[in-house]
Amino acid sequence: MSAILLAESVTVKFGGVTALDNVHMAVEEGEFLSLIGPNGAGKTTLLNTITGGVTPVTASLSLGGKDITRLSTHHRIKLGLALTHQIVRPFQSMTVQENVAFAAGYKKVRQILSSFASVNRAREMKKAMEFLHMLGIEQYKDQEVSKLPLGVLKRLEVARALAIEPKVLLLDEPLAGLNSQEAGKLADTVKSISLKGMTIVMIEHNLSEVLRVSDRLHVLDNGRNLAQGEPAAVMNQPEVRAAYLGS
Image (cartoon, rainbow, N blue to C red; front, side):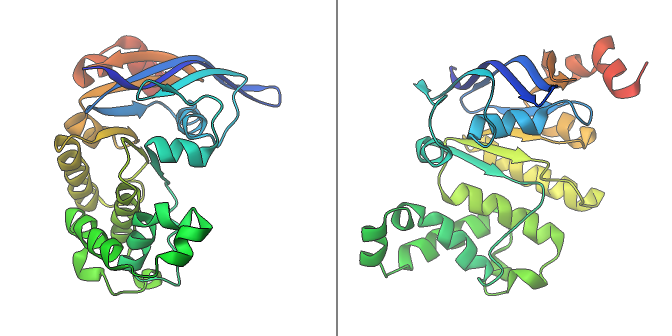
């Protein structure tokens, strides 16, 4: 195994507040890593730094052995990053299938000339159905997204991210807002995607599901690395328990 995603010496400041302080994180190819920690630990800031949404004070970032530290967000996506958001924002004017097809065709729409030359969406629509089936929501393909429950929208968000065929899938609280049954089923789905070879980094506060499906944990607290390793061993560390329980 080798690190497909590497973030080293990541320091981020917002005004006078240090959000991340010399954070290091390595993700092995094919592993399911959960990035956890109390509220305000810096988890989302770290993912947004990796994708280019946040500019760090210092950082060294690489994806698949390529330095992405100074690349724009769209170039990082092109090299194989995909990020889902806790608050789902699909295209309201499109159906479920069209939302995923649009993501599947990003290589066409990112270039003006090729987008004008490519009016046939058959391939993208077919690919969209494959991802909808993978996420178990193919029956909603023709429905407007504005009428769908949160559980379906969360799965749609993951399907859209997978449609760009990333090397690393970054998930920001995919289980947030779901009841226990929905959360368990989506966690199972994400785990099945991981078992097919997808490298996944997931931020999640649902610790019972995190412990059940993750290969490894990386814990942040107050913007600093706290612990990392096998899930049960990490959660048994006194400093990790103190971060969560306050004692």
